[in-house]
Length: 340
Image (cartoon, rainbow, N blue to C red; front, side, top):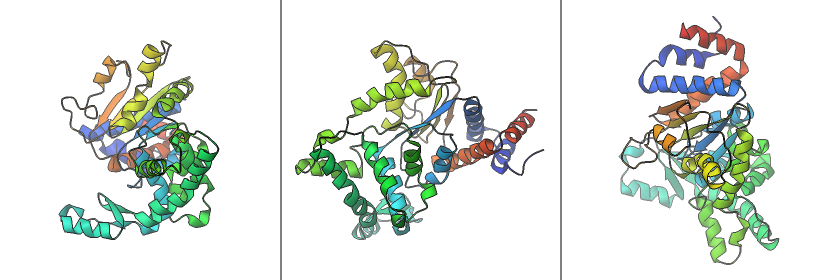
């Protein structure tokens, strides 16, 4: 039995039998079947996944053609850039659960911004990037140019000289996405550090608010991107966390159907990884079946909910998928044998 090239897939098939483990295995196998059959996969990424270094597996997955579009929070977008330019200056706090208010005040005084057990250095991340992106905003204001929020970051991360990289470039998902020019939406970008910084330059009159296209324009552009992505075998939806990063793009199907009154393929796959408890009125904790009533999914859509920590689940899923991509024949043989 071929196993030497597929240790993660083999481990998953052998051990992930029930509960969240089974959901993880089934979501992984359905993901592989979909992309191997010519389908695309669109990712929605909430939370602080970039600070958690998800790019270690996400960036190679993008390069391997396993991810075909993204919806991310403004924080995830900028934090991938921060990791690239300031990685050596991050500090980790594994004992954060036992911190007092005084402990966190000391972190503030060190000009660090804690995100659970790690922290972003203000000077080496925020202020260093500000030196590059603010002139881009000012030039756009002077030239009356208008661009999407991510386009500034796509340009910046590719223009940065390698000598300014403090983290591994191959682990930056934003750099991988920019090089591939992946379709990306950043709904609610204002709720991010650089969204706030941009607002301050607008308030001071140094930048025009019109240089950034709106969320409505993101959706208008996404109509066409969705149509292209959904051609052939269709496009699946792989969601980490909840909130606007997921809510915004998944609405494109009913909006095309009911608002534009045009035909649209349903999402061809759905998986959400979340630790949100299913509860009354919680979109993040809603079961996928609820989305059927909104015409976002259908009764035939493969649906998976993995109630776990994405920093544990996603690297495993992507590592297994990368194995499958490199060794598709062996992967399919192993999967077939596991069904017997």
